[in-house]
Length: 256
Ligand SMILES: [Zn+2]
Ligand SMILES: [Zn+2]
Ligand SMILES: [Zn+2]
Image (cartoon, rainbow, N blue to C red; front, side):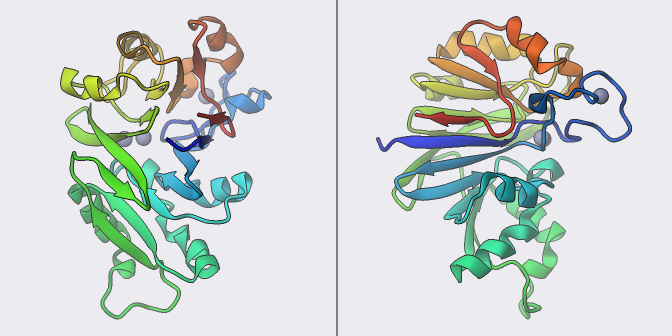
């Protein structure tokens, strides 16, 4: 297994933090860790650069992290906070003089075709995103020598893919994981899992529910992402967590 560096490009729920027009203490916080763009991950391994999801903040995140190359983009699901920034792959088209491979489930590809119809036209207007779409199912797949194992999770009634890459597992937007899929996560050194807030939600784990999954999987370290302003201040919530569990924050890097 090659060493891997993962960077949290965003750790916020669909509205981001601060939320527009909100005056709560989290949205007003001056702690930079409380300022969260929409969720996305950058994974560097084996000399390759991968991004999971291109939300509305994609351009800003790539610039902020200084990412100069992308070998593929892998999608978790079709919600707008995970797809809205796809148009900005154009920057990588110009820099790399090539199309960018996208990997996603069928329903995600259908959604991308609706949202970005111009990128799929037969007679494309010059300058539109150049992409190469690969449909994936719940079976492991390899991109340029790097293996991705999908983890099928439920996000209310929607099927979402988490991904295990070696000892690293990333799960966003889930409120249930079947025991078969939990088995696929076991043995991960690092588990990233979503928790929206402390009170229950129809399509996301609460903090307590995420901690239960962490307890079952027993990773060395776990990180919480897709966080709402209702979770509370980073500095306060962090104190309540077990020693090996962290609230992720934007810009956080982990070497595995
Ligand atoms: Zn989301
Ligand atoms: Zn707020
Ligand atoms: Zn979602």
